[in-house]
Image 1: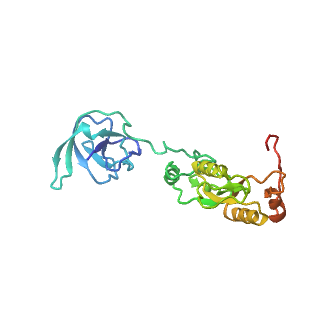
Image 2: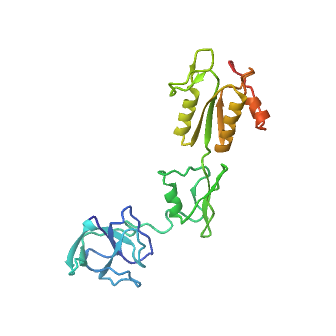
Image 3: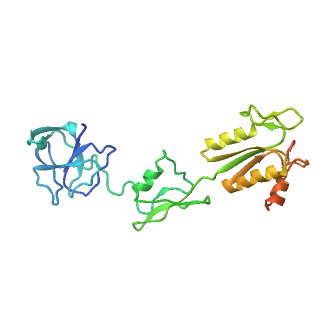
Length: 275
């Protein structure tokens, strides 16, 4: 097992390591190489000059200890019946503060730990950051803006997180057929057209980590169009449609939104051809 030893005496510091299996012995950087008695119980008072303290890496340093020596630079001189070190020999001189990190060196009071708009992901470390600053919970809201988390006067401001919107995708047109559907034929008298817009949009959205709702293909029927859009509004936050927005009799998206669903079309044309 990899172990470490730290050294004692001047500042109250905090030692951190990625591994909780490491051991450290604390002592003062002014202590010279030589043989020292090992203390294993947390010292409430400064240690005698002939002693060092063994500590689990990541634990706070006892008062007065200021440096850490690698176990590779020590040698066990005597052990008790249980195999615990009684005395160790320090083989090297270390600098003050070596292998020790001061309290507050990671995050200072008032310092931001997450920015507005940061995405909380399963693998990005954001949850670990929130846990690190003592945040026990995240309040999830349906809207999209976020509040920044900061430390102020030792109090934690509430973290407001907003889930990604669910996006529904709908294709329209009698002539369209689903590439995966090998049984249904198009109801149009024209040659069938494979629906490529919907799978493309769904793929892009999923790549961007949005939850998606596939509304499939709806025919040029007001009832079918209304049912599809109503489902999208009820089950998703955003509905993306392709087709059915031109000036033809069978272009039902805009009249369905306005007349059947009570919606508003803010703009309905773009300066492009065909369009």
